[in-house]
Amino acid sequence: MSSTRTRLMQTALGTMHTLKLHDLLRPLSEGLGMILTLHRVRPLSEMERDLGAFAVFNPNGLLEVTPDFLDATLDALTAQGMALVSLDEALEALNNPLHRKGRFATLTFDDGYTDNRDHALPVLEAHEAPAMVYVPSDFPQGKGELWWVVLEQIIRDADTLTRPDAPDLDPVDVRTAEDKQRFFETVYWSLRAMSQDRQRATMRAFAQAYGVDVTAACRRLILPTEDVKNFAAHPLIEIGAHTVAHRAIAGLDRSEAMREMRSGTDWLETTLGRRPAHFSFPYGDKGSAAQRDFDLAREAGFRSAVTTRKGMLYREHRDHFFSLPRVSLNGDFQQAHFVELFASGAPFLLANRLRKVA
Image (cartoon, rainbow, N blue to C red; front, side):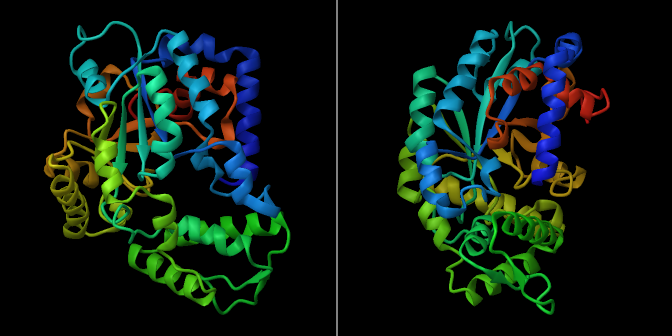
C-alpha cells in the first residue's frame, strides 16, 4: 500500500470510529468471526536498529507488528467475547451452526519468519492461542527469494539507482527517504505485474548488479528446516502449505500452479511426518488467486485455502473454504481503535459493497 493511500485509509477509519458508524453496522457486519493475517512480529527496538539512518523508509513495515501490539490485540478480542481458536475449529463453526456459541478469531502467519517463534510464540502461549504458520518449502531450505526485502535493502543502501524493470532509463536519485519510498513503490508494483519467471530473473539481475545475495535474506529471517520441525511440535502451532517458492498462483499455468501447491506440500509432509491440510495463496489478492486457483486448491486435497481478500467469516463461507478472506494485522494500523473497527467487520463490508462473500 502506498504511503499516500495509507494516510487516507487511516483518516477514513479514524472518522468512522469517531462517528461510531461501525456500531451501527455491527449487527450486519460482524459475522461469526475472522481469520487474522500476520507476517513478522518483533520489538520496536529491533525494527529501529535494522532501519538505521532512514528509519522513516520502511516500505515493508506493513508486514510487521510489535509483540506488545499483538498482545494488546488478543486482549481486546477476548474482551469482546471472541474465542481464540484453531483454523480447524473455525471451519467447524462455519460448517455446524451448533458447534460454537459466540464469535471467534483465528491467527495465521505467512512465510515462517524466525521472529514468529522468538517473539510471537510467547504472546500466543500467554493467551493459549493456537496459530497456523504457512511455510513455502524453499524458505526453510535457505533458497527462498524474499525479493521485496531484497529490493528494500538495495534501495536503503544506495544514493542513485537504475530501475531494474526499466534499465534503459536514466539513474534515479534516491538520497532522501521520500525518494526511496517513491522508487520502491514504482518498482514493486512493476515487478508484481510481471510474469513470475521474469519477476524473479529481474530481481536476481538487480541484486547481482549491487552485490547482494538474493537468498541471503531468507537465511537471515526464516526458520531453517530443523527449527520448523521443532516449531511444528509445539502444541499451539500447526504448519500449513504456502507453495514451493512463494509465487503467485494466478500467474502460473495450470500444471505449474498445481506443482507449486503439491510439491511444497510434499516437502512439508516428508519433513514433518504429516501432510498439511491447509493452504495459503502467496500475496493472496485478486490478481494472485482467482476462481481457477480456488478450484486447484480443492483438487490438490486441501481442507481450506486462505487469501488476503479482506473480510469477516459469515455462515455463507461454508461453501467457500478455498477462498477464505482474512483480516490483516497491519503494521501501519497498530492502534486500539483500528482493532475495534476491524473486529466489527464494518470497514470490510462497506469496501465489499455490502456483500458478505466478495
